[in-house]
Amino acid sequence: MHDRPDDDEQSRAPLIPLVQQPRGAALLLGTWTGRIIVINTIMFLVTFYLSGLAWSNFQMALLSSNTEVLLQLGAKDNTLLALGEYWRLLTPLFIHGGLIHYAFNTYGLYVVSYQFEFLLGRKSFLILYLASGMAGNIASVLAGPSVSVGASGALFGLLGFGLYLERVVQSRIESLTGRRPRAGAYTVMAIANIILGFLIPQIDNSAHLGGLAFGVIFAYIWLRYVPNRLLPLRRKQARMATVLLLLVLGGGAWLGTSRWYVLYQLQGAIQSADHVEVRYIYLNRLVALEPQNTQFRMHRLKLSLLLRDFPTARLDLTFIKAEPGSAMRLQELETELLQGGFVDSAAWLRRARQEVPLGL
Image (tube, rainbow, N blue to C red; front, side):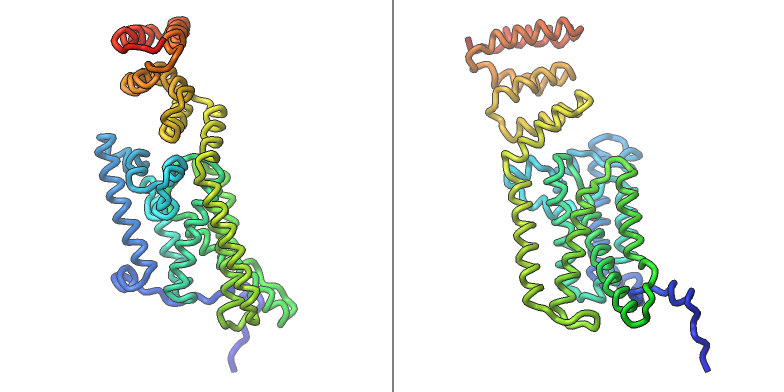
């Protein structure tokens, strides 16, 4: 006669049974989980190498990544999205900003991803992973203009799927036994990572929450469309939810990548920035989006002279030269620089004004 496990053992048992995960080459080459890990690793090594060359400091490149390198490789950037580079809603999933970022996401992928690939099948798993990441990037685009990379949105999509599945299993167990199990592992991981995201600066929480929400909704649809032992099929309801989800994602992508919305975001970011260097970064993107705007060019000319970025200052000065009234505005800027103690920048502007014919 077998002993019955006690209540504590039952409460500690996972709500979703774990499956045996392949190892080594069987995982890396034979599963999509492993292939994604391989792609992420290759992209990290490329990013590390290029960032080291950009900074001439491989130790620094190991801990973080050069922003220009990230942009070259496909990082999410609202300005470039507004200019038509829509693939940047997908490519950031395979790029990471430094060793710590790469290591955390790769470990998370290794721990949880194969369980969902086994449960859902390869096709549905890929849809969940890629679409969750894109949903996270859409949420990130809507939330702010910062450059971002990483697979976190996709990983949170997997956690969201697991969280919803655990809730359904909990309800099922409660209806059969009258007792509600403790929170499952995916629920605990999702909550802990959300809290961690708000405690650590420079984490893109909007991407996390966007991916999590997509994962929950995907689980809602999947359980009502695919035959299973937990819920009865309601395919009409699942189709309606799918259409609604696609409309929300499409609307969010359209809004987040629209030129007027990104202009609004960048102008707000410039006004709220505490440091001139941060304002300058956003102003560069603003000029990239609206290169013919004289007001933006004039603002950037001023900041470039404050930061002694004379090559950029010459670009803006060349553009401004043909504008009516430019001579007076530039004279006022030279006076402002002198009064602020930026004598070398004022001298550079005086020489440049003499070299470049200006509008009257």
